Image 1 (cartoon, rainbow, N blue to C red):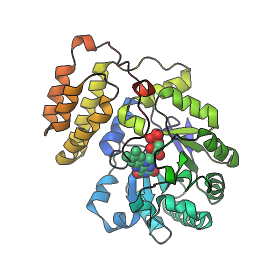
Image 2: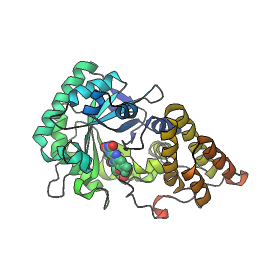
Image 3: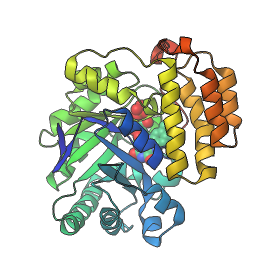
Image 4: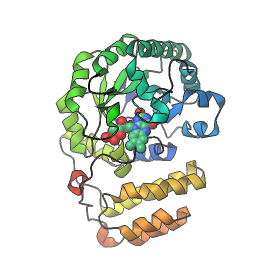
Length: 350
Ligand SMILES: Cc1cc2nc3c(=O)[nH]c(=O)nc-3n(C[C@H](O)[C@H](O)[C@H](O)COP(=O)(O)O)c2cc1C
């Protein structure tokens, strides 16, 4: 059992916010596959939420299968972040997360994200306002967390200082992606630097993030940095079943076999069902057209299957293609290709 403030989580493995991917169907899929302590929405623009923008409301959609749900907000000190946080509580959020790490120009040049790393005192004041508003509206039941990078660039490694300040004003946990803003996704995540944040802030859980591609990496990140939990992003898009494998490794010391080829197809079939149930058809089809490129990376030589799903225009066409590939001999064959053996560098579309 792992806690973020008053919220108890079944595991210390967290599904990261991933813009364009962590919609409601995908969050439910990861939870059903097991091992997920909490899943976060995409980053949500505070102004757009309060305006009732249709896209933002879709991104914030949650339901009882999606518990506990973290909603991630972004904005700066001039934006109505406290009001958006109160809105999120009223719409199903059990945890509010503030984005302090997005490096994308649209966000970081004016609206927030990594921009918040450039002025720690102002960011702390903003966080304090959000915590107070959330405490009032949520009666102390809803913790506020922050997700940050190490700093804007290596000359400004602010994460230990900023995390300490945030803990002092009531932030309940901090996730640290072990890269600087200027790196985007290049290089590798610095797990030792995450350890420096852990040392600086003993009072709240620090969650490590960056380059956890295999279950063994989750264990290694905890051992290397001392972090209390691990957040996983890109690997979840390839292998949403890895949370369960990592949770098993953390609790028993043994990771167990990888899923068989057919079991991976079953997970994709379930993703299709959830898309059909909880998303608009045009969106669901498009999302799965793209998603197969991620899934396919650990399924061996399946180019024709990938191509069929990439170009399919209906859920049923995708289902039929998967069923064609699920032959009896693939039932017990583990899909042996894994992470770095496949040459999967962690940099993917940003
Ligand atoms: C396509 C994409 C979209 C992302 N969107 C968000 C986001 O909305 N909010 C956020 O805090 N981080 C976002 N991230 C960063 C991830 O949450 C995570 O910090 C980063 O990918 C490192 O973790 P990983 O090595 O497990 O992928 C995004 C990353 C990717 C690749």
